[in-house]
Amino acid sequence: MQSKYTQYKNINMPSTVQLKLIQKDCGYGCVICGAPICYVYSQNDPFHYNKKFILLCPNHYPSENHLEKSNLFLKEKPYNIRNPQKTTDQIKIKLSNILLNQADQEVLIPILIDSLPVIAVTITESKPLLDILLFDEFNNELLIIRQNLIFNQEKEIAIEFKKNTFLIKNKSKPILLKIEFTKKMITIEGTILLSGVKVKIDNTSIKINEVQIKLPEIMDTTNHTIGISIGQNNDIPAVLTLTKVNRYNNH
Ligand SMILES: [Zn+2]
Image 1 (tube, rainbow, N blue to C red):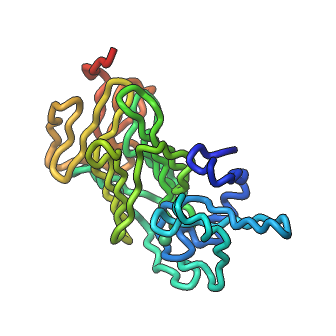
Image 2: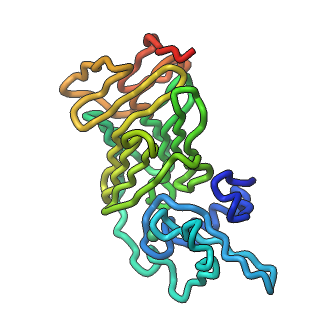
């Protein structure tokens, strides 16, 4: 498995089983600051031919211009191991005024478009792990995050992390996605594109292809694993279901 983004850094991504162990060893976060969404970084030792993988967030991953840092070896235990967080039983996922409750081991799908989970969340060892797929208006992949690990990031995408919040930006356009992590809640705002569907979520509204969706003031979200479902989804119940939407056309 080779990440496009990390090609120039010559990293071969480890297997899924290895990744799970790496995440556990690193305390499910950046080894320096504990941030949840990370790159997999290889500490290459050319003289001993061993490879040790660690997790580093966008703030601590050595940049293209600072490859000399590539011999970064940890002297301390990973941040999240040194500073274990009190865990909560349940984490809520917030999309505008849709709140999904996450129980352990359950997979929640905040956004599903044409049966593709564009955003999904699972809890492993009390840590929420996000899967995110971002596309441009022509369905080109821009970003792939699996279980909080950045697998593929196109050059035009920038990821910033400040005060519990990840900002995913398309350099030529405004913010694509804002993900805020607090102990009890993950708040997702931004714009998601796929197959002629544009979902725009902010604090107070949800727009689909520029049409504001009327949300009931009180929504029963218990037992729902899907937040917003657009297109066909094999009739799995969602808090907000829109089977037919007028899709924009770029061709
Ligand atoms: Zn960090």
